[in-house]
Image 1 (cartoon, rainbow, N blue to C red):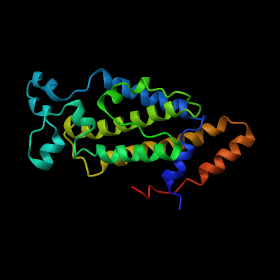
Image 2 (image 1 turned 90 degrees about the horizontal axis):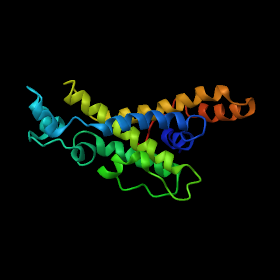
Image 3 (image 1 turned 180 degrees about the vertical axis):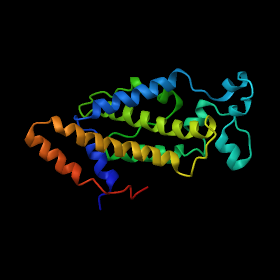
Image 4 (image 1 turned 135 degrees about the horizontal axis):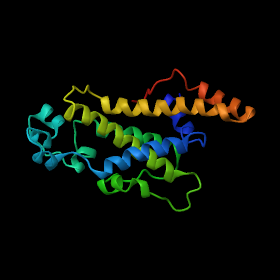
Length: 202
């Protein structure tokens, strides 16, 4: 049985809104690349030295683990990054036959420059969108906990990413209004079938 995310994966890269989604996600990612306020950065801020450590690891294990960019985006076992990357990987596999790239800090920092050879299906655009959205979801949960000192519920990072994908579906519906009538009817019929479904796999 097809799930919401199965159908979304097939729809979310249509020309109607792929470019707009990409631009927004990439701007967020580029802003984050300029400076990530983590780790030793906080040692120079009076009364905020404790923010140098991963708040998720400290809460769950009691250990003070320095929150480097590498730790924040990838190895942390408590900030929800692993589940978020799994969603991104799953959506990717539903949209292309290319292998999901091995995510590393270098790849994350170079997201805006990712390009595949012979890319006729806009896979380069898709992977840039997915990585940028996933990074934003991880960052949002982390900032809520570390910067705003608010509680983050389990799976919040994953749910944030799922909400972003859902928003893409809603935005695509709005974009159909400017289409030629026949094409609009086809697109809206496909989108209508997505409404009310859930991310059953996750």
